[in-house]
Image 1 (spheres, rainbow, N blue to C red):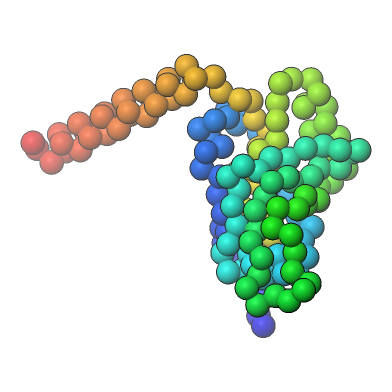
Image 2: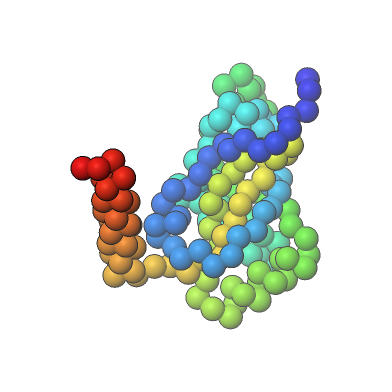
Amino acid sequence: MAKQKGRSVIATNRKARHNYAILDTYEAGIALVGTEVKSLREGKASLADSFATVDDGEIWLRALHIPEYGSGSWTNHAPRRNRKLLMHRREIDNLIGKIRDGNLTLVPLSMYFNDGKVKVELALARGKQAHDKRQDIARRTAQREVAREIGRRVKGM
């Protein structure tokens, strides 16, 4: 089988950008077993409730749902097991310092294949309050109205 080139997205966490203010993003590898990779190649994964934690100097991805592989046997994986994220020590130490200092969390934004390897895009994020979410919605609505009006003027309506 030929090696994949480029980037193909497996799953995205659409709620993350709504619920969190994204401060910085990082790319991390993920330690998986064979049936998990096969299930991901079928495009099955859910990042909806997942989050990352730091335990003993290691970063773990929790509550990520990768369904069992259909053609798997007794060697199939547990769908919601904790998975270790692979990052350089300097990056991990930097993240630990930032998480400890402020009220920040690590949230996965997307999972994708990059040249045949599974990668996770992690975001260093701060939770949004309800009024912040309303402001974002109002800002998006205003931008949509402006774009609509510009389109009307260009068309001569």
